[in-house]
Length: 382
Ligand SMILES: Nc1ncnc2c1ncn2[C@@H]1O[C@H](COP(=O)(O)OP(=O)(O)OP(=O)(O)O)[C@@H](O)[C@H]1O
Ligand SMILES: [Mg+2]
Image 1 (spheres, rainbow, N blue to C red):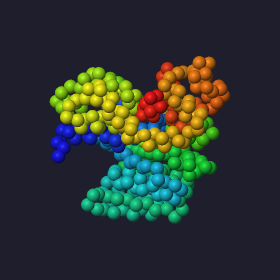
Image 2: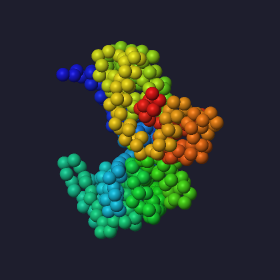
Image 3: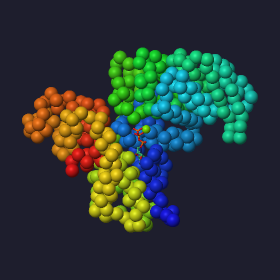
Image 4: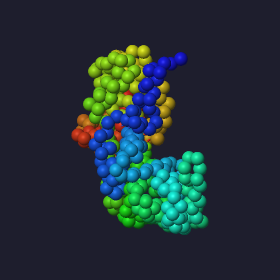
């Protein structure tokens, strides 16, 4: 039987969304997002896959929910499985129902006002043991009805003196089901008028989202403040590990072991957790060699996944990725680099563009091209 302390790592280094005790720092990003929401601005969260966008938004939602001076209510909707306008319309309507139910007072007069605001959606209000639930209906799911229901949400929040926050996760899905951008247009229309509602948009397809929010031909262009979610600073991870080691072993974690964790994972939040979750199950704090050994065994275990990911690339693209894994550079079209990769400049540029768009590569602060996934990087540079 594992003891309680041997399971501390499972709580402190989750594979899923991190909040509360599992949430490491991000003080600047949390403050900025909370400020946007309280000021009524809309935000789109930009970041590499699995860098912690959903966790950040969830953590801020928790913190705002605890505020006493302002009443903030958040509801999140995951659009990942939405595949047409009917399912999208329903997902948004249901979220609006749940969000409104959080703040509508149970008094009869208050209910009457609510029924009026949502009149077009034939609201069905049920009082159960868990509180109020509100169901909204529409005869014709469409961009227009999404527009209407969101405007009604804003009127309701304003009427009851609350701030409503609707979080739309995996938002790129909308671009995939709506080639004419009618839904994006409807959302823009609402977002420009809101008085008591803030939207937070995020998703795992960075390139698609960037097109939605940063292409001047698209309806959502310049509608939101952009918030970047990058890596967590090493010093913040060191502080976090120190507390986590005390909680697990009542001992310190060696500095060189902590550094090795950050080195092999490249401070990629998902891989930090994947590795630490396992390390924290050990009886004693790890030494650097333990970290390396565990990383190597992860590499073995994930070999199949890595192959799958790489199989979506062309031979050229794979060769470029491997060359950059071994030798990161800011100038992949330099003579030496091209010679080492055995490639012409035009092919190099093409491959690099695809690798950037597919989030295999990113440019760091010094403009150096780096392989994003640390396991892929380790695999290719062996
Ligand atoms: N601030 C944080 N502190 C500790 N762990 C974190 C933090 N943020 C994210 N993580 C961890 O990183 C991993 C990815 O987090 P999350 O799912 O929030 O990322 P995401 O950017 O929303 O991913 P996706 O692109 O797949 O939607 C999870 O294992 C999570 O626990
Ligand atoms: Mg996410």
